Amino acid sequence: MPKQKSFCDYVVEHVNQAATLISLDPYIHSILTKTINEVTINFPVKMEDGRIEMFTGYRVQHNNVMGPFEGGIRFHPTLGIEEVRVLANCMTWKAAIANIPFGGASGGIQFDPTRYTFNDLERITRRFTFALGNNIGPEYDILAPDVGTNSQIMAWILDTYLSTMPPHKRQACKHVVTGKPIKSGGSQGRDKATGQGIAFLVQKWAEEKNFNLKGATYIVQGFGNVGSWTARLLKPLGVRLIAVEDFTGAIFNPEGIDPDDLCEYVKKNRKIAGYAQAKSVDHKTFLQTRADIFVPAALENQINSETAPLLNVKLLAEGANGPTDPEGDQILRKKGIDLIPDILCNSGGLIVSYFEWLQNKRSEFWELEEVDSKLHTKIISAYNLVIDKSKELKADLRTAAYASALSRLERVYKRRGIFP
Ligand code: NAD
Image (tube, rainbow, N blue to C red; front, side):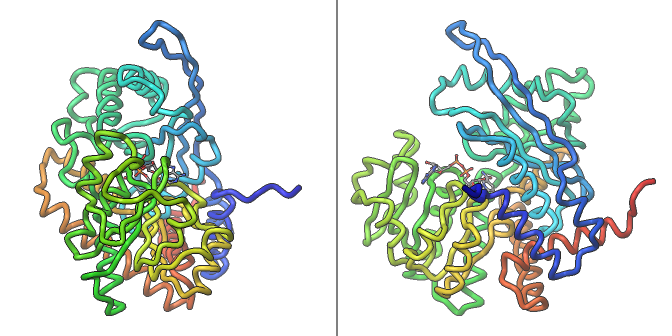
């Protein structure tokens, strides 16, 4: 039986398609199809109850021609090297589109964090950071939150990393991690950055389409960092949230679900199931919900040949990485559903990670208004770049986004050349 295609295969397809379209120099294409470094670490952890458990962690560094590697840390039971590799790839493309002087990396640990105590999570995180050793560094490879991790995990990573540094270097190394709590050197606005970027892009899309967001409706898949912040930031624009799905199921209320209230509920219960202000619906009904905007903000491969025909929306704003497969893409195009592709749509987190890194390096602290305004400028200029590229190449926005990234990286390689 032929192997089922993965998110990794799709990204390779997108890159190849865009490379052909812009006639990317073959030697640059071959450099960019490989990762620079891949680290797999098996490490033991002494748990709270005295047991020793083995874990497997990864850090993949895809490319650093634009600047130091940067990318998320994911804690998930099915995480494997292939997924980490493709996430690292995506970070390179995102940084290039947003014109951020970072390269792409990704990493994480293969385990289910929801099954461990707070104290054990700390032990696992610290032991992994220690095991990573010099494979990370503030001017070399910078970490950020992703699925299953948050600012608390980033604080433990930071503290462990700094503890391995000579005392006189510690203050100068805080920027090894972004997405930290504000009191540990984090930036204003980093928590909500990915959602804020998505909200800015949805607004921009609406302006360009002459579409009135007031009274429009949206649905969100995944109610973690990205999904919940996007939901909360769309609310002040007058858009009504009518359905939400997470790993425990889906809920629906045509009158509207208050994202702030749902957030409070999820903080207490760690799931949306049982939320009393909406009725529970199955996965298919959730996908069929008639709404204006759909924000997938969970995992990859959610919109495919089986699920794309069910969608009843005008815009798909990809909060997650790789939520749509190529068959899904084709179906969306046939149905006339607009799409803001992941490597543009969810780049707000990367952009504000860069701002946090800069603030740490310069010992500065920017107010929230400054962070938001700089994020707006960066993400809208990335959007304009992709729109212009799609007009120039007569290509869809996903292909145009990849083409924009590849063109920018090609220019850097052409100037710098290859040593020796
Ligand atoms: P998170 O762990 O905070 O939340 C993930 C959410 O997805 C949870 O609500 C979970 O219940 C839900 N979920 C998991 N499996 C599901 C399923 N099968 N069906 C429906 N819901 C499901 O993760 P996050 O940080 O919000 O990341 C979500 C997506 O956004 C990922 O693809 C991630 O790579 C991407 N992303 C995150 C950031 C960031 O700054 N955190 C930045 C860019 C992209």
